[in-house]
Image 1 (tube, rainbow, N blue to C red):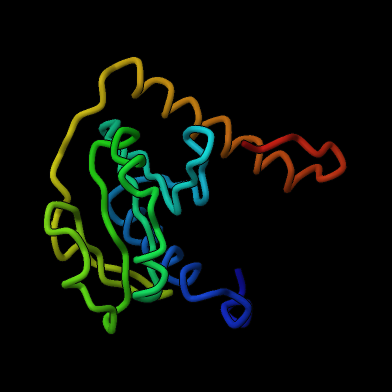
Image 2: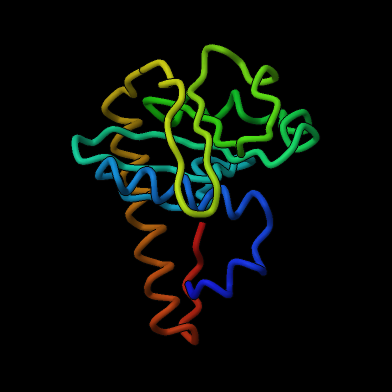
Length: 152
C-alpha cells in the first residue's frame, strides 16, 4: 500500500495496519477480517511461528468498543486475545483480563499480554486451516479477480 493510500483508511483500519506490523515483528502472519464462525468476524487473527493463534480487535473510539457485543465469542478461537487502540483511547474501559496493544498506522506495542488459553487440537487445526484457505483465496483473487473465489 502506498503511503498516500493511508488517507482513505478508516481509524480502525489504520490501527489494524499497525497491529499487523507488530504481529509480523513477533514472527506472526496475519489475516484481517477473518470469519471463524457464522456471525463472528475478527479484525486480525495471527498465526505465530510456534503455532500460537492470537486475535486482535481494533477499537477506534468509546462508541466502537461499547457497541461490540460479540468479542466474548472470539475467545474460543484463539490462544490469546488483545484489544488494539490508539494512545487517546480510554483504556480503563477495556477488561483487565484481556491483552492491550497501543498503536497507530505505523506500528503497535503490547502494553498488557493477554492471558493464555490454549486451543484444543481439533479447534487449532480448524483455525489454522481457515487462516490458510482465507489467505490463499484472497491472494488468488488478487492475481485472478475474474475467477471470483468466495472468501469466507
